[in-house]
Image 1 (cartoon, one colour):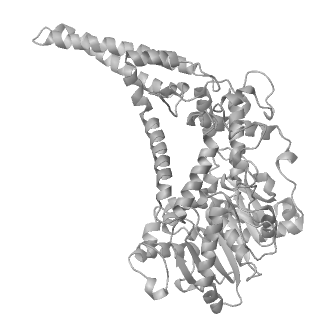
Image 2 (cartoon, helix red, strand yellow):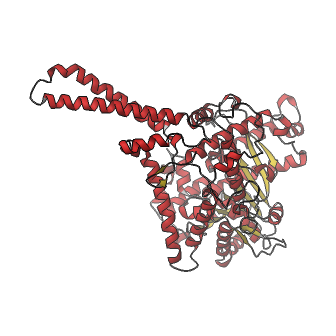
Image 3 (cartoon, helix red, strand yellow):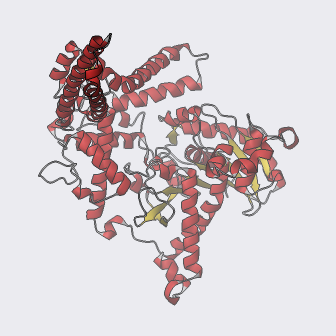
Length: 606
């Protein structure tokens, strides 16, 4: 539903958003009215004292005024409840008269939080746009990243006439629709056929490597992740390292609180201080923290790049334009995500120009190079591996939860020779790209246009479904009658959800966000291992969660999947727990075959 127009401005709240705040205020007003009425009835015989007439008049006026307010709020809530998700505003005439009468002061407190958010966002974008020409230096990376951020957000949302609650309702509908379609499919349509024994043996080996090197990817986050994973004992374990410095003695490089970071890195990896060659927590736009260590267990030199953890990293993430790369890999069409490629180039220059890798291989010349990272760090690690591949032919890369919109098609095929990516469940980041965001926007518009149910019912039932599950067919969030199918044909109502004369969106032509010149179709790195949760262990309960692992094709991540775990599946601690579970389960099946079968049979069953 379109946003309300108030004081000559359109706000990020619609007339059907007043159900919940109106009901909340109505409850308070009713309790207040009952309390005042009870007080007046109990003590009206004692109001014959001096000033009693004035107090009695005040209470009567207050009771009447509260009654009028309660009736007004009841009317607002009732009218707001009648609006369908894709309906036009129903209560604006009522709101206009209420504004003239005095209802303005009733609604403003309800609108204040959303109003402040919208005004702050608009002020930030305006100030940022004004400051861009006045940046300290013409080639400022911060200004370039901020400009790219605004370009993506404006192109994605400026042509829609939706408010945030509409998008939330659309996401709820999409999740239930996805589950409904998945439940209606045959098992062989949902689960891909298992590869043969050679590939399964390779899968076991790569899973073991992922399980090992994920420790380094997690260690690159430093003490914040370690404390988060160990809230009760973490501070005690690294507290001693926080009070002493080793920077001068061990030639480590980093920012503030390096000793705390170093203590958490030692605890996470299980290595000794002498095994680390270089640690950097320098953090700027396009410049990521990283560490270099000697892993004697796997006989490798490990380069771990940190993922997103600061506002500067977010700007790097959002610089999603495609950039051509000058690589010595014999591949045509070398293009990649601009922000991540520049971050990878920074780490590459530090490793080569500062002699960090030379120092590492002078100590262990027989070791091989392994590059790892999680999230943003996974994307940077994959590009860094491509840059280093010509100098280190035995190089391996392990990218945990990498972003989808990273590599061109040719670079994606090239990276399969030495890169393995790991994706957990419905993790949104490996499915996140500019084109996938545009596809999600179209699906949200489509499902909203096909729904005539009140928004408050959709959100209430959606919350119940997310928390406790259920059958998506039983939830009243679809059109009455008619086949739903995949909703592939747009309705005329979809165009009404767009602003008039919008140049950036069309159901028959591509959006500028999908322009091949600036935002070409990009792919995730390397071969992909997908960890999927088996069974129903509860919406948020992970204690009993069990996972299966299989090789997956990149096309399986070509759409953003909606679910309660689409964000938590990306967290490094959740990924580590899932890896622990799947590796231990597969090892148990291999060494303790059920039913007395052979180990080969068990591997084939897996």
